[in-house]
Amino acid sequence: MFLEIVTPAKKVYGGEVSAVTFPGVDGSFQVLNDHAPLVSSLGEGVVIYQNKDGKHQVEISGGVVEVLNNKIVLLADGLVGE
View 1 (spheres, rainbow, N blue to C red):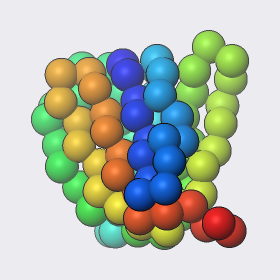
View 2 (cartoon, rainbow, N blue to C red; view 1 turned 135 degrees about the vertical axis):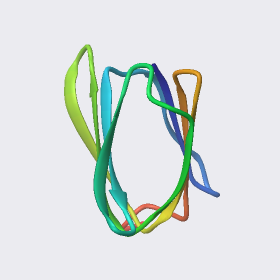
View 3 (tube, rainbow, N blue to C red; view 1 turned 45 degrees about the vertical axis):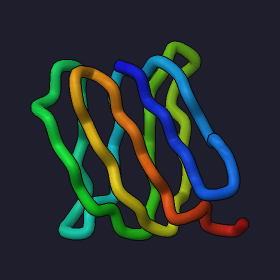
């Protein structure tokens, strides 16, 4: 799957991943390869993604995620601490 994480200020990440966990408004959820199409609001929390280099984390202040055809686009309101 391809994951793109974008804030109004910059592109935070773009690359292949095998799994992503998001801080949903009603609880966290995970997206794996061939996930059904999805659009969801996100709350403040940690996005965890797994790529060939291991697990990585990005703390966001909220946003929206779209999953479609193994492409995930996260439009984050911002990063916590920025």
